[in-house]
Amino acid sequence: MRIAIAGGTGVVGRRAVQAARAQGHEVVVLSRSEGIDVLSGAGLEEHLEGVDVVVDALNTPSLSREKATEFFRTTSRHLLEAGARQGVAHHVVLSIVGIDGIDASYYAGKLAQERAVEASGVPHTIARAAQFHEFAEQMSARTSLGPLTIAPRLLARPVAAREVGEHLIRTAEAAPTGRAQDLIGPEEHTLADMIRRLSAHDGTSRRVLEARFPGAYGRGLASGALRGDPADALVGEMTFAQWLQEEHRAG
Ligand SMILES: NC(=O)c1ccc[n+]([C@@H]2O[C@H](COP(=O)([O-])OP(=O)(O)OC[C@H]3O[C@@H](n4cnc5c(N)ncnc54)[C@H](OP(=O)(O)O)[C@@H]3O)[C@@H](O)[C@H]2O)c1
Image (tube, rainbow, N blue to C red; front, side, top):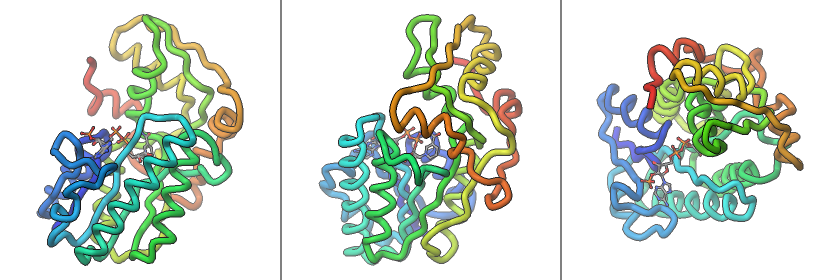
């Protein structure tokens, strides 16, 4: 299969690229560092020539409801329209477990993205995953000031990005179903606990304060909804402790 992976240089996108190549697929990486800006859409269509499946693992760092919504709506529209013109048979988009009741901030953008894909008429699968183990690294980098990290109160069942990348490629190989089974991790953690363990593993003396973030966004993070339902989800194998030992690289 020829698979285009939008965001194929990102945390999960590069794992999807590895998983696709390991299965013998031909991969087209769509990212600005590869010279393709999906937000502008310029030149996108020619890169989708002969592509069977598009996997969308793009991301924006914005927590603004308006900016995140604009980013995810526009990038999805560009991928879907260019894909339809090139006869792409399946559009797979990565979204987040448990966001239905959190129509705020970044998650409003992800919900808008899901709705845009559903309304497109293009055969698709929305694949939702829980927070990645790597989310501890991503959030720690964003919410730290010197040795102090402020972690939002967040109850999670984190999963290794590698397992999410493999799940995306299995989803791409299958027929479009509209919605894949949720993928969550094997254990429950708070984000603060994950960042503390990451810091201890790296030997840094980071002080991590947990704070309930304000508004609907903070309420959603703290609600436990993002953990998903283990009775109804695929459950990844790699624990956070295993990930620290086997996948996380200090620094
Ligand atoms: N992080 C989590 O815990 C988590 C959990 C569940 C689901 N998700 C979802 O997974 C997706 C990927 O997240 P991530 O954390 O892996 O993202 P990430 O590491 O921030 O990577 C983002 C990717 O998007 C590309 N990109 C950004 N803007 C672009 C543009 N205008 N044109 C082309 N490429 C662009 C980046 O490459 P360039 O910078 O080179 O353009 C990069 O490859 C997101 O949709 C997120 O909602 C994340």
